[in-house]
Image (cartoon, rainbow, N blue to C red; front, side):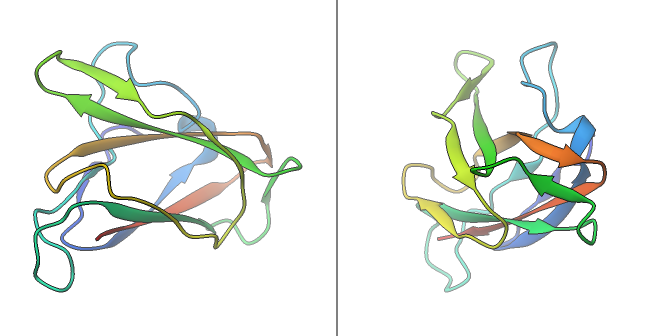
Length: 128
């Protein structure tokens, strides 16, 4: 599913088959899931982003307590490698997380684990 890159354009939602999004991207080059836009919805330069998971499978996929584990990877064009942020644990649907450590134009890859069932998991991303 790594070929499903979307240009965020100040906010986008995407859904992935959970079985396909639980891997790290450095096993060969994989395309990013999201490439952040240079501007936030208010027209100012993007200096971060928010993300949230949503239930894209009508309850067929649930988190194992205490919640999903989300690890985001950032493409480093100098090192030509994906490099990860620390994993965020206990992430539940519709909880909003943010960072101001990533500028617009960055390529992001999501790895999500600790789920039970089959189906799609959705990710919403918006530049800040």
